Structure formats: C-alpha cells, structure tokens
Length: 112
DNA sequence: CAGCTGACGGTAG
DNA sequence: CCTACCGCCAGCT
Image (cartoon, rainbow, N blue to C red; front, top):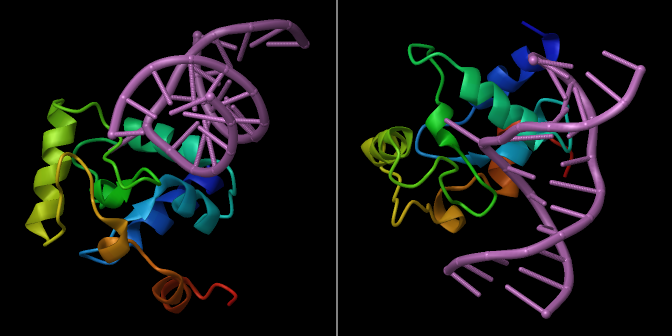
C-alpha cells in the first residue's frame, strides 16, 4: 500500500453521505492533481468487502464511470439512490449533489 | 529499461 | 447529445 494510495482512500472516505465527488476532485484532494486515472485504477482494484463509499465517485460530468448495464453500474446506482441521490440514465445532477466550493472548503479546508 | 494501460478530463466538431 | 482526439502519469508487464 503506497502513501499516495492511502491518501486517495482517505479523500474518498471523506465524501459526505448524500453527496458525490469526481475522480479529479479526489485526486486533487489527495495531493495528486491531474491523476484522476490513478483514482479509477485504485477503485478498480478495491475489494468488494472494503468499507469505502466508492460509489460516491463519479466522472466530472456526473455520469457513473462503469459500463452502463454492467453489474457494478447497477450496484452503484442502487447505493446512490439508497442515500437519496438522484440518478437518471446513469447520471447524477452535480448541481445538486456535487460538492460545491463552499462545502468543499468547509470539509477539506481548501483555500478560498 | 521501453512500452502499455487506464472506474479520467477537456476541447472540438 | 455523441464521437474523436489529445494530455495526463503512476504503476505494471
């Protein structure tokens, strides 16, 4: 387990219930700007049982990243809806469920 | 050491 | 909305 990987997991674990964040935002929060792909890779290797809100991580567009129709895709939509997040056609309206600048700052102490 | 490979992101058409 | 490209770079082969 690499230090950078651990920070990615921490960033994901910090996403509040009922909200979502993009791969890029997680990477940035983990001190790895521009490494969104690394975040995706890690989640791909994440064991089923691991306690981590992996399903709260979406593409910057609000779309679920997994292949539409795949098992993981359906599971992610289910988990998101289970905590009140609206998912239509594999997409979540970030305008309402995404972490905005204010919440982002309050949660992670980022500069204004 | 030289490629390959992404649960990505942004732009252009 | 969709496809096509290109930039990205740690981690694997």
